[in-house]
Length: 472
Ligand code: BYC
Ligand code: FE
Ligand code: FE
Image (tube, rainbow, N blue to C red; front, side, top):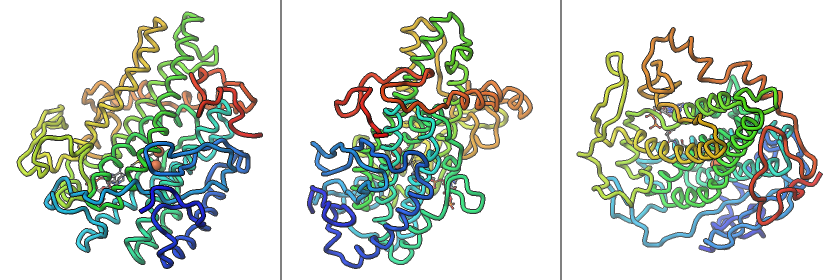
């Protein structure tokens, strides 16, 4: 299978699409639906401006992407799988040691299809959630970042649609259509996971989403990369390479806000920097609490027989499965986790197999904490003695063992009344949102930056920060 991407085809790919006419025709008939969807529900502003974007040109380690000016609707969305490993064997579960599957075993068809549909549903959802953000971008640099993330989420949709068309027959084609029919926030046909129906219409939300929610993408894709179904593994592998950039948009975005906030606090010697046009730390913490908690929900139930079945079948592994020195069967393994019991949080021992969503979430939380530490270093370097913190896992949860309980960001189990009375200190209020929205005035002049965020440290692909990333 070629490493280089074939841009000669209508659909760029490295899967030899031109050798499978049926599949090629099926995907070519889906393509105009995708383009219509992009026009209707993709970015609303700067629709036809040229944007300095990276496009994948190879799946090899070096020089896999190039940068050039492209109009968004003309972006070459394609199908790229990481290089195959002909000797790849299954790393866990009951089929461990056997060759990875190139096709879907009949017994696992419904489960695999389900996982692929759920993954695929999130990708266009995020584009829909972010569609108005171009209007209010704090700079041309940020406008480019947004569009880069958006086109790659569009490509991630292609990655899942390819699997559905190539491996799931008629049902797969119907599901591929469904991915364009559900919409973020729609009353009648919402996106499958609730987090992808929420409002992400300001840039503080955008950066928190890219930090916390795209990072769920990293961990879910890492678990799918372990899959015995090799095409899924290889496509997840390549998606992860793109994903790194999305998370960096989030982490540097929040970092730049924190930087600006700290500067304003020092200059004006006050926490109350709203009169100076900054986003106060209390507001940043509330948005952090919100996006962390709705992203914790994306791991599914803390106890999940689905997760156990996926693992045993070899469909979905753990983060970096091969680096774990256990039997990769987990029939006797246990973990301890906290959960609400008799009015308090208790440590309970649970078979690891049914707690795999929690195991993945543990790795995710460790990863989330790294950025928070970096943001706190910036605060400390400005002499600010307040720190940002990740909320407790049980805070504000709708899914899993904490759902229905009322837990503070510090992890205190409370009555509903007490929790509700304090919620305004923990989550963005209407007033907070109004204030943040009042700052969302697009800055699209060359070299200019909105006042509530510091400039980035470096530009993109060796270009200066004040480069014309989007041609106006
Ligand atoms: N909302 O056993 P349970 C990304 C359902 S992000 C609504 O607890 P399971 C991206 C569940 O479907 C990564 N429903 O959970 C980021 C099940 O329904 P059924 C996306 C939920 O199945 C930013 C029932 O509740 N990828 O890429 O072990 C921008 C009981 O389920 C939710 C994936 O998620 C929820 N939050 O785990 C762009 C990977 N949670 O089957 C992109 C694929 C659970 O009883 N998905 N339910 O009808 C999965 O691995 C699993 O489906 C989940 C749920 C981890 C999501
Ligand atoms: Fe994605
Ligand atoms: Fe992403």
